[in-house]
Length: 414
DNA sequence: TCTGGGGTCCTAGGACCC
DNA sequence: TCTGGGGTCCTAGGACCC
Image (cartoon, rainbow, N blue to C red; front, side, top):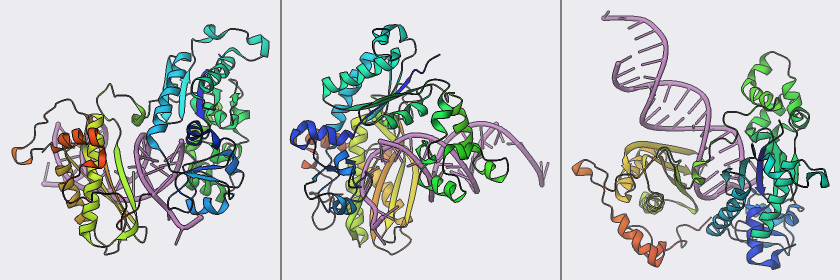
């Protein structure tokens, strides 16, 4: 059997989309995430600016220091990227019946059973049939959307994903079935999905730097400590998939959820440029966050069974408080619960740096009128606001008490 | 690395029920 | 009356990913 799982990753996706809008950006150092020197972090960095050490996730302050004088700093345009992501997906669906979105710029495909479809002119280049098909697919993405993409092919998702990372930029890398071990073991542990900064630090402290060193640990306490991750690495080395080959689609990237249950979560949080002093100010901001998540829940056709408040004080201490409720997308009832949670969580008098609201345990909004206790009837004023917003924009209407404009003295966007 | 914002998934303890 | 275990839900926190 040959490798048949493909991971397709769009190269510096946000930067590439910005270059479609403004071709003058091609070949220039580009940072997406905000203005030079602003608060926040880099969401995407072009290869030209990576050469200076700028990386996504880095604070904008550091990026501003490292980037050359002629670097272009752009704000993130969330709406535009989603649109291009859909267009890419449409191309992928022409090549494989099985496409899963793992994020806005990352997709998995299963080419099982497609072999015969792609047996054409393979011998001309020496490519295997699937590798050739994937190259054609990347070319189709380029010609249809203008976006560069890289792809990895392997027997499992994890191998395909790591391979796609090594194929960048704009390349294709195939790891033949049986070659997984030789491919994986020399890699630094951090390259393996699921091993993040914390786990890496622990491993390095134990003298483990590569997957090979991890796998070759002698039996004993150290090996026992990493038993869980070891099992996954060994499984990948053997080329065995975990569960279904493509895994589940990330709920946030599903068009709709056929099961009608557990369609992920919706959250909105905000770090305040000037920390919030009085509780009144905080509650006004909280109402704004409630409005936004409820707006999004109605748009997605879901109600939340669990409401969570997140609160971070100026000393960077973070607490969350959550409560399960009757399924709701109603601002007033969400705000009532969150106000209680806020007072319960407000144990230290320090100024507030961040507030967040999360709706989770979401259920599809089957019934247009959700029955509730008479004294706790949802007041779906939200639907009326949705209509106004559709016509005049999100900020054309807000609930009383919420500040009308973004920015100003209280907060500043990201 | 003086630290954004959107997510997912996992763990662990306690409540509660059978 | 005491003990026990399994299953499930709720809540809090943390790691990780893009």
